[in-house]
Length: 177
Picture 1: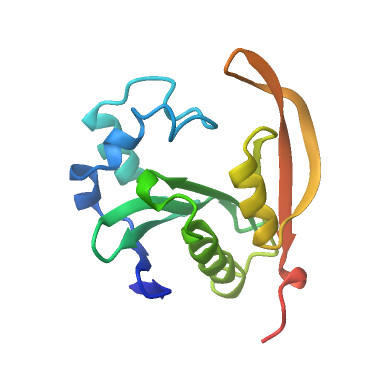
Picture 2 (picture 1 turned 60 degrees about the vertical axis):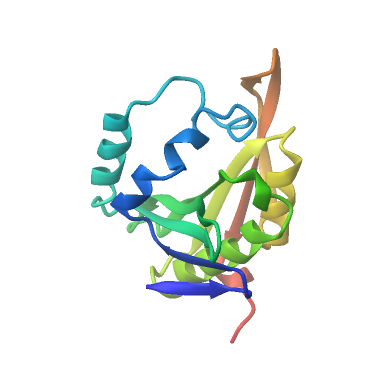
């Protein structure tokens, strides 16, 4: 399975071979992990192998974001998928900084959200991000998510407490095809 995103990018299922590429190094880059906990602790190759094995669980879906020339440049996922509540958490990690600011997240996010509503029968997709994470806040709103609330002083980042801003989108918010 591969879904084309514009002329230069595509998404596909995350593969075990991705563990042997640049992927693990993204978690050592403090700029890439500035707004998440991925870079807080060193991760071994065994950690990444266990993560890959856990993808067999039915509560998550991970796609690799790829560039035709540069290969695997990030991941996008629906996690904590609840078949009972029909909702899931949206997450993205664009590890290759050469592709930041090129609307890759928006293109991949739109495909993943559509997949969640159309193929996984979800009713709601949500995410939370640091109030200081302007890029993710912009991405969430560009994908049609609405600000739903905040958890005050929830994250300790760069020496100070910051709020987590919660976003969500409902299936009924999607344009009818």
